Length: 420
Picture (tube, rainbow, N blue to C red):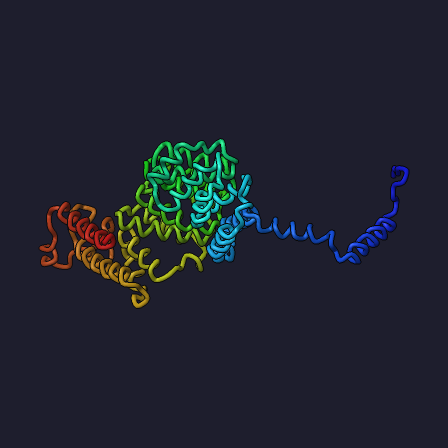
């Protein structure tokens, strides 16, 4: 160990020395220590510190913290009041606090603090225009907000604020449904990775890409979202939109789409898989996409029993899918096992419609030779029972097309009832 002249080689003298020094301060009433304590208290109430704490709460929410989610709005209100009541001097020539106020309002806080500062001319360049744009956005004046934001280069702002501004610019410019908006959402992700801003940008960008028919982009964005934010408490909304897209685009109908569907499922927890598959099943039935409905049902049945069992509502949709696919008898049996007293009115109507469809299909089935025979437990394609008499032969029509049309009409009627 190298020692220098006068260096303290043992900590004991230093501790004794500090002890005497602290004792001296206490004997003087702690007068020298009070300013430091006051400074710490003041720093804790600085606007940028309070807003940074809110950002921390948002980080906990996208990580799945339910307590942070439940208490977030109360904290936004409390911080907004603290900023509203803060002395004007904390804003003058203080860019940190100005940025914090803007971020608070962009995050859903009330615009009062920015309106107060603008009225007092306490916000100067380069933030005055941004503050006006933020107030217009918070008050729902989208055309004016858009005009303001168009004049602001979000890439010249600090990255965290720039990402937030890019996200809002995309929203006021058409809710993410244009090439300009797509570029802005990408910028939001690049400038604020791993934050609520990236999470929100991906959550909006994925369904927007699907609506525009950019399905490969939709798939990539959905995968990225669930890889980066698998536990976000805001993800349920995206899950519902995802289900609609998968059903509308008939993602169970082709090998390429099936692979994409499976990749998305692989990123989800078992519970979220069940939720997504149930929604896709319902939407697919309503749209008449029976192959995708059956694919979703098959995937559901591979989940653990306690998850896949589901509610009476889920079992009803499973039964309807089986009835409309090649497991007619299994679907009928499943439908008969459902306790309809547990169903809400829309699902009860669905059960009744499914029952009527079963009756219609049971009366007619298409035989392999193209003739029509009464249903005896087999579906089209099975070997029908031979007619018992010449009277039964009279029930057989010569044209298989008539029978097919009757079955299709029954299915269409059933799907229309689901849709309504």
